[in-house]
Image (cartoon, rainbow, N blue to C red; front, side):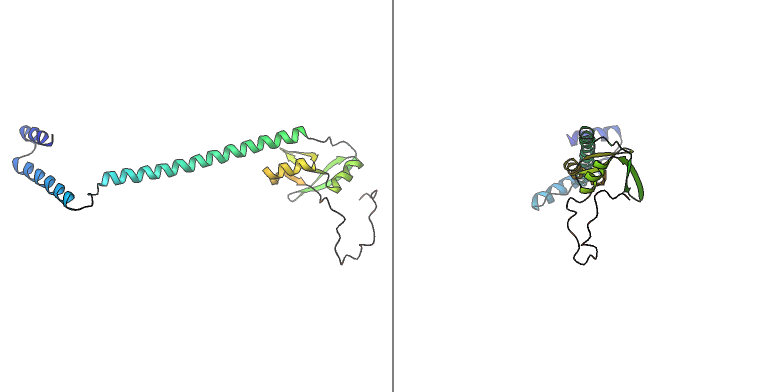
Amino acid sequence: MANSLLDQLQKSGLVDDKKVKQAVKAKRKQEKIQRNSKQPAIDDTKLQAAQAKAEKAAKDKELNQQRNEKAQRKAFAAQIKQLIEINTIEATGEQPFNFTDGKHIKRIYVDLALIGRLSRGVVAIVKLGDKYILVPSPVAERIAERDPERIIFKADKNPEIVEEDDPYADYKIPDDLMW
């Protein structure tokens, strides 16, 4: 087949006999070297194609991982929203309860019973959008597993633990004390 192409190029006048003989001789020499040596001749185009294929596979893998992470974050956000909407505790009352959101002090108005539950860690405050919502502590723990930044305030459930060198350890704070 190669000879027929060379014949056609020769007949059309694009190459002369000398160049045809050089091309045939170079081809035979390459084949002989390849046969005699146990290593196949390295083909640059095949090497570049394999390298490009490997790069493309790595890039595709990275893109798939990014898509999966994005889908997982989206699923977690939907789960958190559903948990909050289903388990919301209505915050009604006239007593202010102060808590911090980052560096800002925020306030939510609740009744005395909710203040006690918030202080004991039975109820937690979570953030949904721009709103602060009260949820039971077990729900807050499930939310924290998915996104800990959503938990704004959650008191420790064990307030009875006191430091050994606390000078006021003997004095109990009354439950009805309002700051």
